[in-house]
Image (cartoon, rainbow, N blue to C red; front, side):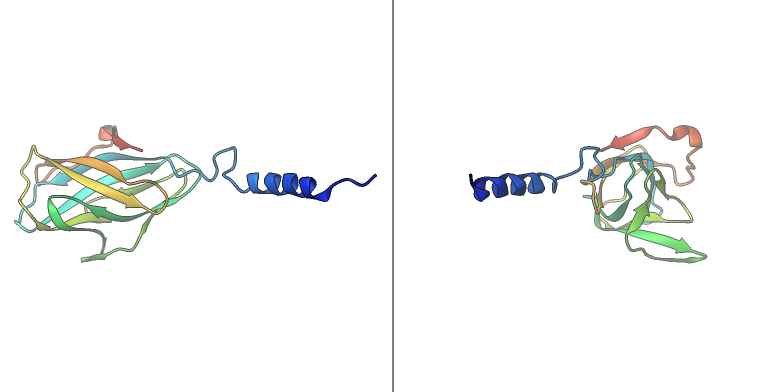
Length: 160
């Protein structure tokens, strides 16, 4: 007796396609990112401000911070400081199980073409964009120009 080949091929094809989806253990899922210790020192000029924060990655997959936007500025760029020079940075990696720290004297956000100069006590909204993860909106409090965070201030301000 001869068995029909077509149904067997259809079933085999469906099983093969089912295997092309994401893995059951979530390895293909976007990284689990959260943002902590976000703040902006009160700007000393009318046109520029800096922003600092830490992006924590609690997954087994790395991601990259690629850009940022804010209603308060015409442009928000990711900068890196090397010695006494500051330059625009390309995508910055958030390693699997690690963190990306944007801090004074190192990598940071640069808010350019400010629409108004934020004052201490205000909050600035910034949207962070990543390679794999959906954008995260962070509410960044404006602190005194001399503010320095402590390690105790690591509570989460935004989570994806």
